[in-house]
Length: 375
Image (cartoon, rainbow, N blue to C red):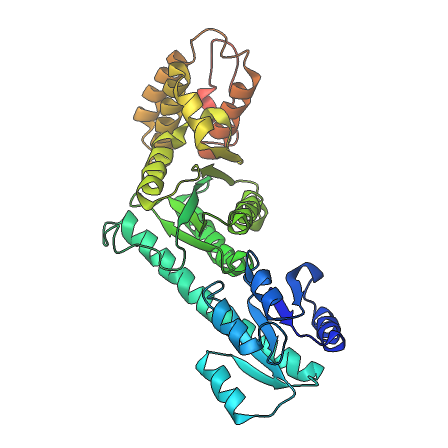
């Protein structure tokens, strides 16, 4: 939580700051101002969640500063500080939308209660706004709302980043689905840790059932983007959530874009190229640029398609199709130098282990697969 304190009495100013620090608010999230003009200047680029403002200050009094500052920082909650128990002051503060009115000297208990109340209100509003963003994005994916209806009201100009989350495992369908549900539940538990006024995060599915996540953040503010990237990093380490080594999570990332249309288009492109994880390596993060780069190598595209078909045939217990695909796969691997490319060789081994059969043997020589291990 970011806090701004504005008071022309130095003793009051630093006393409040010390009390706020004792509540566990980091020093870098606290700003101070000695008058109304400094308060206005401090709002620019800081956008505090809560501002404690003294009424009687030089150059620009507290009520005037709040009136001028509301447009600069519309999400800020304003709390009046004063030594005057005046109904007129209180009435004007309420008319300006003040969230509280504290008489000086302020006790630690009053300060803590006020900050908690504002934090709880902000959190409820933030979660509601995040649910709205997720609902709009899900509606776009499934064609239940238009792009105009999905417009974001909370950012003047939003940018987006997204990722498709793919689970590869030889486990049966029911077990994989259970792990995916557990994964979603655990992600929802910690999404709130990354949500601030400058970030929204959605977790939903594409029409083909693939799990996706996306972040929206103001174009002019890097904090939201940084928090979403931290969130993606946490997803990358999510395999330990499952309690099994028979499941790999691959994060396929879009590029940053400045509108919904491009975001949806990139999700479609990433989904179409997702099979290339078979030769790039599963259980890691792969960006769209990396997928596009591999898609230009016809031999590796052919190998990836065979591997995807092999995985599907095996899961469906279609062993005739499986054996036919093995033949096609072996032919696809006949291009020169494939076995000497260690990264591709290891990626293929890993993919087969987690999508077909853990004991499946892949050789570098002419007999590519030991078919007895899977038939």
